[in-house]
Length: 333
Image (tube, rainbow, N blue to C red; front, side, top):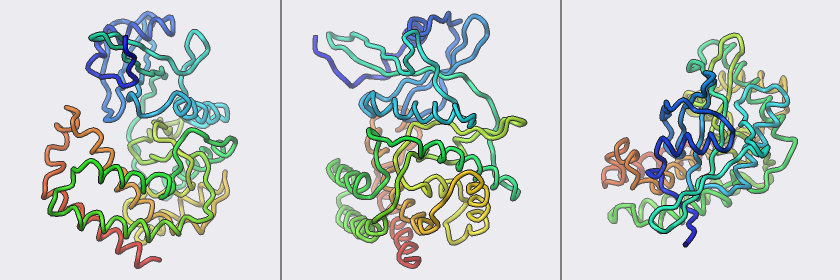
């Protein structure tokens, strides 16, 4: 039988999802499984016979190695030990935070990594008052202080030469950019990367959340704010965990940046020189999102949510967006 590292999510029937959890954690699942929104992984709400609620996360096959996922878990454990509000995974019967499900299908063996988390409820959090921005800053500062305890070896580095330049090459290899826009698109992006790469010279990197936007923050009332979904964890400049929280480009958000940093520096030091990386990091994120879409364009859920992705009109709009972003970087350099 030929082993395959890549799995297919359509093999994850409800009885398989619950059965794997029951075996790994010695739980009795009541049979009700609720799919949660997640484009990359598959996350399901489950409940045991005692009414305890959990979220089981099946990682997208081939995206992360076991070692890389365990580094995500280690950061969560480090935060949890410092009583920072995150959702750390539950250890299985063998004391491991990551389990593996193997399925035979059509004479092939498919493998899925999965982890179990306690289910935490809360409401969406939108920063409005000054005190809200201070809360966000304090939360990020505490996470970063825990992040400095260890190095990340198996995760990506949030630097142009380590991520965005290879992403652009992979995107070009896909052949998805419409032929009439291809030359202009890739010439423009290469110019943008040549512009921003020197700006990261000598920048200090550490473990960060890397996808720190408001959709990954819950307000749990008296318990305060909770940061979740560390799936994109990287080693990178701490400022990466600021700009996704901002309502607009950096030059229009000085008040919010000042409040974030005021809260942040109650728990962690910050290199103010790295504020100039906010717009370059935004450009890097734009490239990453395009490749993320390209990798998933054949998924049913993706095509349903992004029906116009990849059309000629789409790429024309992308070129205009990148021109605007690069102009902001050039004007602020």
